[in-house]
Amino acid sequence: MADSFDCDNCKESLYGRKYIQSDDSPYCIPCYDSLFSNTCDECKELIGHDARELFYEDRHYHEHCFRCFRCDRSLADEPFTSQDEALLCNDCYCNEFSSKCVACDKIVMPGTRKLEYGGSTWHEGCFICHSCEQPIGSKSFIPDKDEHYCVSCYEDKFAPRCTRCKKTLAKGGVTYRDEPWHKECFVCTSCKTQLAGQHFTTRDESPYCLKCFGSLYAKKCEACSKPITGFGGGKYISFEDRQWHQPCFTCSQCSASLVGAGFFPDGDRILCRDCNSNL
Image 1 (cartoon, helix red, strand yellow):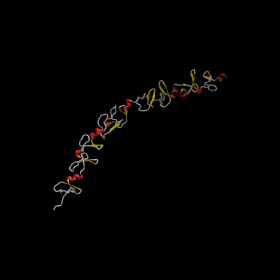
Image 2 (cartoon, rainbow, N blue to C red):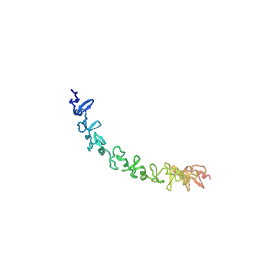
Image 3 (tube, rainbow, N blue to C red):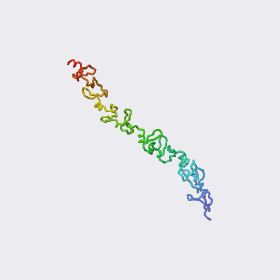
Image 4 (cartoon, rainbow, N blue to C red):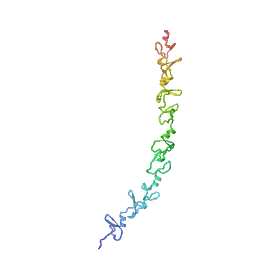
């Protein structure tokens, strides 16, 4: 009597029938499918042994069930992604979830280089300077309303220009007579010393440091021959065509201070009351 050759599950004879060997045990096709086949996550039916099976994240699908949730396109040989467990082709995912470039109104595809600013998104090549129309990329830029400028174009277009050298002032600077100057350009007309942060005065609308102004234009004290500028709260005395620093306004004979006192001119000299009486 011939040895039996039966399905390990239903015990029916496998002679003359197709079978599948699993773990050294033979199974008829119906038993094999019911015992070992996975269930399709989409249609909930068994995926037979002779069907092409696809799986993603522990979920199994018939080939014809592995489709885009939105457009029903087959994903068997297409790139795809998953959103809230729904499978989406790249086109549908981008249309629904990806940003649009505000410049060209096209989708910014996942993985492509992009720039985001102020809640808007650009393709890297679409984010350009409003003036020179060159891509800004990762360089610094300056926004102006709805426009964006590279630094050099913004300075050329909007930044103030130095009154002296006519070049742009990127930052800082000095304002004199409502006009902008670079600090290094705002200098004494005579000695060229920088005046930013220093006391200065003007003559004929030209700025001078106090030392140069005193040397060039100030009247000289009759006593010490030094300039009388009046800057810094310094007081002086004027009589006829002569001037004195207040500390220098003393009697020519006894050196007593004549500030607030009576005095008497005696040629080039000035005398106090006592010295004048003793003449």
